[in-house]
Image (cartoon, helix red, strand yellow):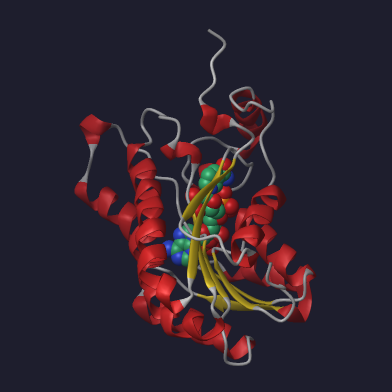
Length: 254
Ligand SMILES: NC(=O)c1ccc[n+]([C@@H]2O[C@H](COP(=O)([O-])OP(=O)(O)OC[C@H]3O[C@@H](n4cnc5c(N)ncnc54)[C@H](OP(=O)(O)O)[C@@H]3O)[C@@H](O)[C@H]2O)c1
């Protein structure tokens, strides 16, 4: 396993939720971590907690100039190198099949897929030098079908496909890839999408807890442990790793 201490790691969407928990974990382990996102106040709050090891790069992952700025910031903070890119930024996109709108679907793929593809592409020359890793955050939505969530699920399925092809293509450069498939974690994701309010969140997560074989939702820290594994494991590439409390099993008491 590679040592995280001294690594330079760029985490998109690090201003909240799972991205923040990844940033916290890697900072505690001695990495130089750069987090990005659109809301400066969220990024600054994380930096205030994590201190000098955490650097912020405000920006939108769908904007090429912002992506370049994120990568440059990570390279500066990491003394010129990059060891890992964690493509974590995403939104929840729900729309019924008989109500698709083209702009909505394009936004879903632009944000959740194309941004990660472009950032990964730009990171390749730097990760080749460090024999680094690209981590995608997929979802249990590719293991269980949630009606109404096909736009989101298909973006996450695309990331799993990317993980495999990139692993094969970038393996000769000694760049590894991996995709974490989290189960339910209480974050801002569904709140930002307007699926339920903060007041309703507890009941909603209580309701979904029983779908997990382990009977509870997870924490961002538990997902970050999986991300850490994929960044460190030197003979693991192209994998989809479920960190999901068993929700992806689709178990039913028949
Ligand atoms: N929570 C779950 O149950 C769950 C389950 C499976 C997978 N996931 C995945 O886990 C990852 C993290 O989500 P989360 O649950 O931690 O939700 P979250 O707290 O909403 O985090 C998502 C982050 O992405 C950022 N983001 C969204 N669009 C962006 C854009 N265009 N440019 C830059 N940053 C952008 C957001 O920051 P700004 O709005 O400030 O830009 C936000 O900080 C996502 O890939 C999500 O699909 C979550």
